[in-house]
Length: 212
Image (cartoon, rainbow, N blue to C red; front, side, top):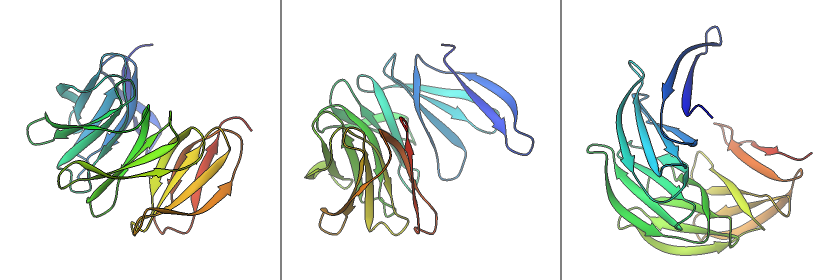
């Protein structure tokens, strides 16, 4: 464990920098303008802020216990962390790098994602097989959606109409319709799916099956 973030130049796949961050870095998110990278450090309960222009650390922010999943709001105003060991989501104001809210969610939150309009945050709770829906206007949980067993990853379609959740124990993907937060389909995939992403055109969902 060297507790760093490696910066890879895509033009020639060369590592140009290794940035020291907190203990056990886990999740990474980038601001929409590309100016900052936010790293969730699960070992010391912090978020490290990296300025991309010079790859320097500009802040270390204390959040909840064992942050893992991390996401930036579409307008770059807020950063959200899923804190696995205290069942909360921390909300960071990026203009001040201060915590402005802590939201109670389900058991062992992992992945989380904002809808494209920024109005809602979907948080996967691995321990109880649910997704908490947080309204960004007041940081209240408006709904709790039951999904598959041991959900982990989450992604949203570009149009914001569907959220996709990978369920690691029953090898499925749950599809949530965001207009009414109902499950419209459950798709069988490979063994122990974790990572999940939607293509920019919304036509395909890619799921990483870790045990096939």
